[in-house]
Image (cartoon, rainbow, N blue to C red; front, side, top):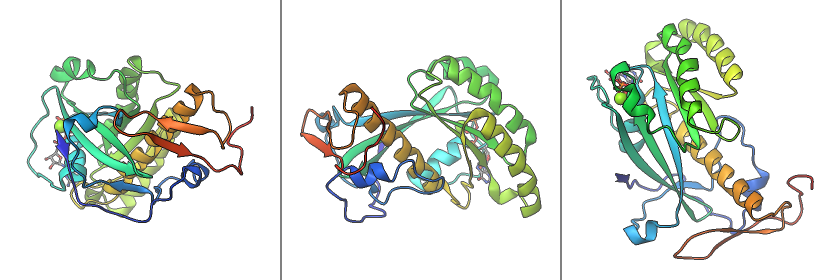
Length: 259
Ligand SMILES: Nc1nc2c(ncn2[C@@H]2O[C@H](COP(=O)(O)OP(=O)(O)OP(=O)(O)O)[C@@H](O)[C@H]2O)c(=O)[nH]1
Ligand SMILES: [Mg+2]
């Protein structure tokens, strides 16, 4: 299912990829101003060839995975718990430097009895979001197992990891500080980026998903550079699309990596 939302953070998109690449890696909590959520409607035929990244969301039952996705994709919040059965799926579209880019968000079930169905959808993820409840230390402890299971189906060397503490609105500042300490430790062990969010208030939700979009887009661009053998900024990278020739040309000044 696709969700077409209003434009946000619309600013002039520079024509070249250089400024975007030179701003990577982005510091946590930031996103490039060039990333937009698009309000364009695309026909199904136009969708072929668009850059799409698969993102899976895992974690204990009732930690708030579905609410997190719904807050971002639909800007809604449901206080009643309805367990996800197997998996749900949402598509969210962005534009990065004029390039259409989509996140496929796979919302998996946390309940044990649905786990084997959900795990069949883990394969091919570019990013794994592991959610825990900031008010439930057991759910943080279980994140390691969720990650291990998700990594069985994915390449640990290339997948992006995010550890997300949910329901921040329910923590007092003192409780939050204690939990954050443990969460940062776990995130460091996992080599994941840590975020704390509230789907009830919306705190950090948009920022978090924009960050996921920025990093997955960056990974796609770098993969294109690798594939095309382009090793230095200055080379031209073509983002394949059947409908338009999208050339992203990087700045000639700064070398991105050593030959
Ligand atoms: N106060 C508060 N409650 C939340 C928040 N996020 C989720 N909840 C509540 O927590 C319960 C579970 O949320 P879900 O999003 O359905 O949890 P889930 O992780 O998808 O659960 P499964 O589908 O069973 O794996 C619901 O009653 C939500 O209203 C939040 O940020 N703050
Ligand atoms: Mg759910």
